[in-house]
Image (tube, rainbow, N blue to C red; front, side, top):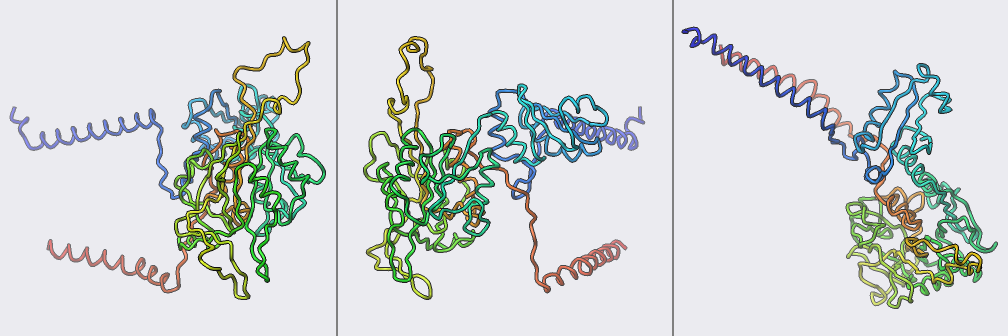
Amino acid sequence: MDWLRSRQFRSGGYAAVYTLVFVAILAMANWLGVQYNETYDATERKLYSLSDQTHKILDGLERDVVISYFDRTSQFVAAQDMLRRYENASNRVSVEYVDPDEDPIKTEAMNVRTYGTLILNIDGVRHEASSLSEQDITNAIITAIKGQEKTACVVTGHGESSGDDMDRNGFANAVSRIEDANYDHQQVNLAEGAVPEDCTILVVAGPSTAYFDPEVAAIRDFVEGGGRALLLLGPVLPDERGRREELNPRLVGLLASWGIEAKNDVVIDQSAIGQLFGGGPFTPLVSEYQFHPIVEPLENVATLFPRARSVGRASDVPDGWTVDELFESSETSFATSTLMAEAAGFTLGPESSQTDGPIALAVAATYDVPEAAAEGSEPSEAAGDAIEPAAEEAEPEGRVVAVGSAGFASNYGLALGGNDDLLLNMLNWLSSDEDLISVRPKDPESTVIEMTAAEMSRIFYASLLLLPLIIIVTGVWTWWGRR
């Protein structure tokens, strides 16, 4: 039995044990990989992970979702990277890949005419996604689940930001995002009468001239009848004569009657942090939020408000109304009502006219519609015994969001910080779609490295000369030492 004690046997035994352990580790890793399909996204913007909004929608699924992707077999790999994220995120999502050339019967049955078509089926409800992007797939799931039509009506006629305007202060990008979020969009002129019945949300985007009494009455009747409204009111900047008269006293008075105070001032932010996000003194930055569903997902997201006025909860809120402030400017900010225009820019008036920050910039308010107003008319006697209200039917409620900056939703402002998510969260809360409030997927963007000519030269010589030289010297030094 001396061979058992030999060096060759021990070395071979050690090698065999190491090999078995290595194979066992590989087998265990493969088994865990199959059982737990987890990935880690190391990119800064989480480009290869589903967004919070998508996870929120998938976690709330109560019905199975079947995603059918129609394309050539050779193109399936390109789609699998995205679609597997949905399968891994929810056991209610399943994906099938169909080659129209190999399965023409199913392709014809589902009325597919082009390669790259993606169709979702939820309990027989069929909806087609316009592309393989996360935003389009998630929106298709939302549309198939919700089913209802929603319309955002943007008021025109008083110099409001236009949904067709692509300039810096236009509203075109906001309208595009509203439509992407499954809202129809239409323009309304309140001078023509009441708010149309098909309006889910009424949007007032920074009017520059005063509304007339009948127009303000139309907004009042709409909201107090259970309608929803988003009011974006910018500050009144002084003209060359220093005049700062309120542009919309009737609209401001309407807000006051609801317990919302919109002051005739301008909010100035003295912190330098806002400049890092593309802002300045006239663009207050918000990084902390109150407790409200609209801003709950924005805990770690900054938002900016170009040309803002203070909008907060009034000291006296009427019965039936509940008013909550959403967020405030920083402690280094202040509001002033004596901003003066000069040839070189603006100057401030006396400090006695200033209000130290933080300054409230937006509120969300609800109104309990009286039962008589909600019913509209009494049911007939014949139907009185046959019809009973549903026990769990929600009470009718008017909702209002008022923001002291129309610029935050402009083409320029919407790209700042989390303004895009904030706008859509406001709309979803107004339309009672609280389950859709979240931080949405962002479009991938390339990261460009900017270097000077000197920096490029240093990198060139370091990679082509310095590193190879270090390796050669190290090798020679090691060889000489051993020799």
